[in-house]
Image (cartoon, rainbow, N blue to C red; front, side, top):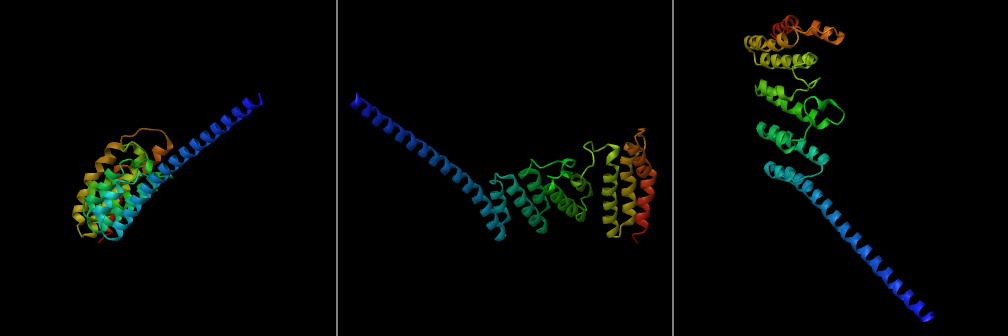
Length: 227
């Protein structure tokens, strides 16, 4: 009996050792896989930064597409957008924002706390588009207060856009063109603000401040003061 007991204990000891060895082996393999994944992510980011330092923007763009971590991708994308804009490659900067980071927040959602990347990228893009005279394209990078672009609640943000365009046109000494632009853009206020019959105080206040007559008067005054 004693001999059999000793044999069983020996077998159990061997089994425990085998189990422990298998456990350690699996942990080691998983650790290597994790390290490999982290190394790959870090590698793409490092390669991106090196390419940027060397001024190789196209190469940097290729590495940017390999970065899986969204936080790193946003940071690097913003850096590349700035570089493209400084190089006068506006279309490439827009491509980075729209196609390499297609998961970016929309014009309404960007106003929340996690929309720093979108707010900064869109500000850079619309500023450059304004300088290039691409006014209608710039509208797509202005933030919205409400998700429905044609809702009366967006009158304030729409006015800010039109006023920025007027300022850009007047800065080029084209006041007559600015007046034509005002008449063209007034359609939005005529369509979305003037007919509103809501009794909500916020809508009543918005209509009083941004009805088409008031908007026309303010914008024409802005043009007259630009000489």
